[in-house]
Length: 211
Length: 221
Image (tube, rainbow over all chains, first blue to last red; front, top):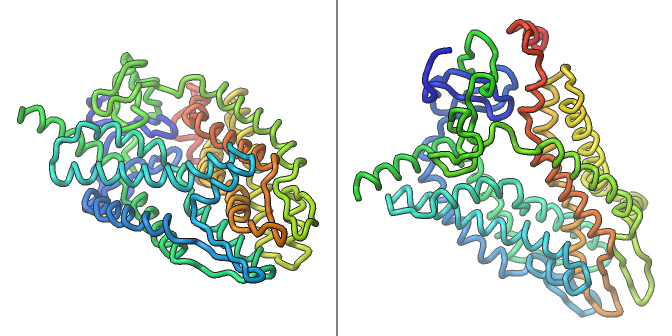
């Protein structure tokens, strides 16, 4: 066996030991045994994430404050924001389901956006990031638990189910939600864990030599 | 593709372990310690992966019964209406000629959970009984299962939206029932099962005396 740990890499899905090769931008390095994507290069990774997380945090406000849908039957009307799905279920005696909706559709996406903003802002402006590691761990472990896109499909299905029974109005909240999902999806595409951990490592070393 | 060394060896066989959070390679002597780059705890394989994954899967299978037998929601209009189960709701949609949306709900609520449970059983049996076949296909199957499982939460979100929206007193009123809790927990448990499963265990099964490259040529044909 040749090479030091720095020149070697193991596949995270099948543990195959490999020699590290340089990756060109836009090119994925693939595991020859299980075909998992090992690492890749994203251009301007931090800057893109900074822009997207700011956009996401701004969009999060109208997506959660304005009604998603309004319903009118016999002159009575009822409108709904995301949070109300959780509240109504809680009041209706299903606290666990309410909690899951609150977590997957509100808390996790918000927390991920905040973590992403903190990571990209700190690395881009070279601020002292005491919580960088924690922010990265939280973001990575929460991947897959934010379910806004599934919530959106749920809204579309609800519209079709109710359209024969009542008049429905699509609210500003639904458009904001669509834009928010686009931004979150893009940010998860540009999120390159290897590159960011590498930057965090350099950032810490710089801090150590500075002070 | 990354350059593979003359012979296939796992990092563990060669005395290395990979940090699961930042993917830095360490010496295996650091097992149980912390990664010097990201601070995560280091393990060559997820501890108790097999038992945790089996346990979550078994619990999900047991809860799958009440999730499908108990009603998930009740629609009441002018005092009339009866509770609906998951399957009842789908049949109702199909009867009303809402074929596409009925199909979407059928796939998300029944097909995906059932396939996920079957797929996880196959994967866990592969590791448990040291099966050697179709390892690459099984890894791909795991990736699909891991990605698609969360879409089963669809029905739960639909219930949440309908309950919040249709609160018009006597005219029309929708409420959630206990089947929804059971179903949400089934989805949660299958997600935990996939999360605790370490795909590297599939590849640890390979017979050590297998000549390198032989099985791969077979895979590529």
